Amino acid sequence: MIATVTTAAVLTDLLYRVEQHRRALVSEVLARHQLNLTQWMALGVLRKRGVCSMTELAQASAIDRTSLTRTVDGLIARGCVVRSALPGDRRAVIVQISPGGEALASQVGADVEAVERRLLSVLDENRQAGLARDLAKLLSPPTHQTGDVVSRRSRSA
View (tube, rainbow, N blue to C red):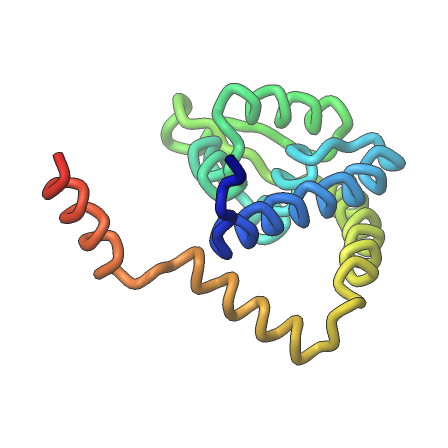
């Protein structure tokens, strides 16, 4: 029997495949600079925020704590990141991007942006802006939808 494919299934599959394609293209750029995707995500957060605790960096970069420790260790070894104790609370660890890390991130950022611009070039600027608005909606659905899902689950349980 052939299953019926819903629009939602097609769309979520396409979203996944587009992101996998983007990651592959970006990973090629990063490899030329001896970086991986998690290092790049951590550098990006540190560029925007300056100083972060490891917990803040994990949350902002969506990197799990175990991987983040290895990621930060690798960036420290390259001189891209500095780790230190928080003044006044030596138990708390903070990290920040170094001048060398900032220079590297600036260079790599230009290369990554060029790849992402080429990827999106099949859409004109208006379509890109519309798609960005629509995708942002998926990240922050209306609160009543969550309640509807919960209430449906509890009724069916």
